[in-house]
Amino acid sequence: MKKVLFLSAVLAFTACKKEATENTQNASESYSEGESAKAKTPEDLGKEIFEGRGNCTACHQPDQKVIGPSIKEIAKTYKDKKGDMVTFLKGNAEPIVDPSQFSVMQTNFEITKAMSDEELKAIETYIYSHLK
Image (cartoon, rainbow, N blue to C red; front, top):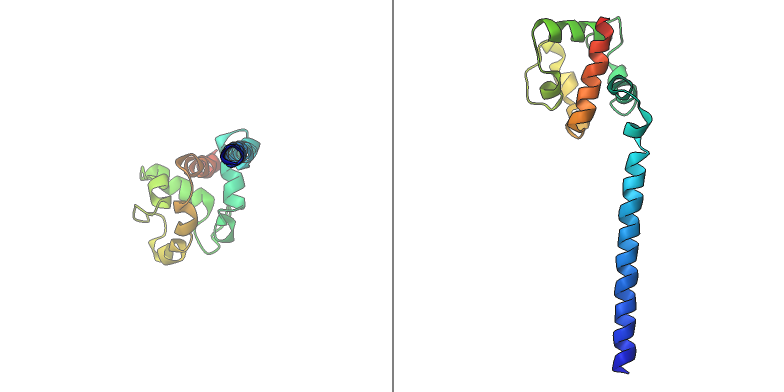
């Protein structure tokens, strides 16, 4: 009887370990097929995030001020003032483009703070692409 219980425990443990390994592999496959895998360049990734889950287009348009400054104005100001856009998007820098709209932007910091440095740099690359 002890052998049967021992064998059952070993089989159960092995099955759980295999399932955990499969879940880990599935998670990495999902990540590799996610947003980063679709984008071919940092600019493309930045555009996808900016227009998608970043919800940036709700306030920022390429050539005109809507709620926040235009993308071109952001790019020009950050370039001219040598600002750090990534640090700002992490919520660790003062606004330099339109400080009067800073309180509106703060609501999106919950989204941008959760992004990786790679994603934030991609957004920055996309914004700077409007200077071309």
